[in-house]
Image 1 (cartoon, rainbow, N blue to C red):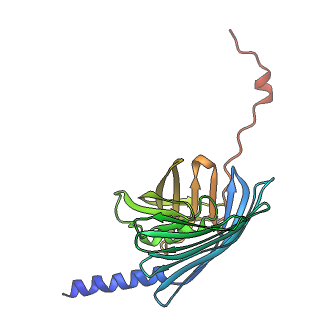
Image 2 (image 1 turned 135 degrees about the horizontal axis):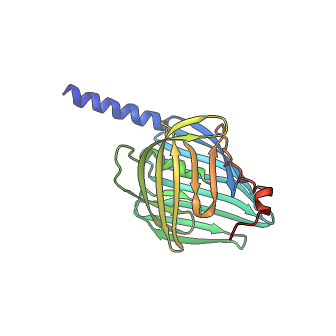
Length: 250
């Protein structure tokens, strides 16, 4: 009985850590060059969890302003409603979604007036965008079990679009080097299967389940929590000028 009570107490403390209010900032790189930045906060009140943030990206010819990306869930991370408001170049986009156990009902406005859309879901989806912002993924991390190497199955709802299956594997702890420090972090590998194909990403999270680093190798994207600066890879060795002039013996 004492062991049961102790385990129950640990469960309460575990949940309390994840429910704590927090905030953060992400610096995002593409092929080693600064691409975007995001700021977000996570708040818990009245049995609900809210993640809310904004960001900006500069793609050269195209600038993206994420005015707001907000998701509200219950205290078990079941989505209740979400809003995404952004400007891509001169185009505006606004999506408002409400969730039930098996349905996402969206109002999508891309500048031509609102259109309604309904998508079947499995329930308990992680609500994300097709590309940026990255910070909505933060609500996945408290739900992942770190004490097993077995694949864990989730679903992600790409706001205003569709649902996609998501597989996550906990790969243990890694010592990760940054420009200004080292940190021992939990390593997660994720694979999101969309109609366009599979998107693979790796996340490194601290013991408070904050995303500290993330990479999407196929897209050459790197994400860093503010305060953990990107460590640039070593420069490629320069060719030996004298050696380059030598002609090898036949």
